[in-house]
Amino acid sequence: MKTYSTKKADIERKWYLVDAEGMVLGRLASEVAQLLKGKNKPIYAPHLDVGDHVVVINAEKVVLTGDKLEKKRYFRHSGYPGGLRETTYRVLLREKPEMVVEKAVRGMLPKNRLGRAMLRKLHVYAGPDHPHRAQQPEKLALET
Image (cartoon, rainbow, N blue to C red):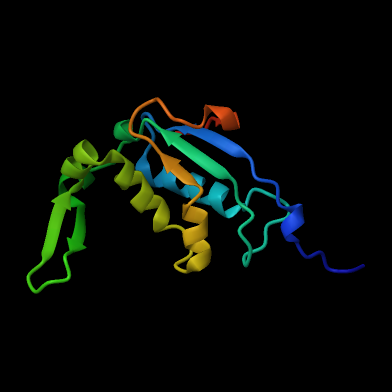
């Protein structure tokens, strides 16, 4: 018996719709990262991008447990001396809720060009509306 190797022609991409309302951020991000990687498929290979497209709606209604809204901080740097800026997740969730989910999922993907390719298949929207109706995404119910 020969070892099976996944070919580019074998990869079929599906579209999934995930409603983030009331879901814990880390649990949501880990499930979405698994779908983006393709670990739910029998043809999964760690060196290939075999994952599916994921549309996350209601990102503004995601939940952080404990004191994370106030204590967890998002850092960015302008590149200039003294250019470090920090923001609490309460402010970030109010101003850019899509960024909160994207950042959590990005942290669970590989840190190379393969991870960046997987991240391009993630589509996050703050509200319940999204422009991907033509792709007919399959609604995915994740446990909270």
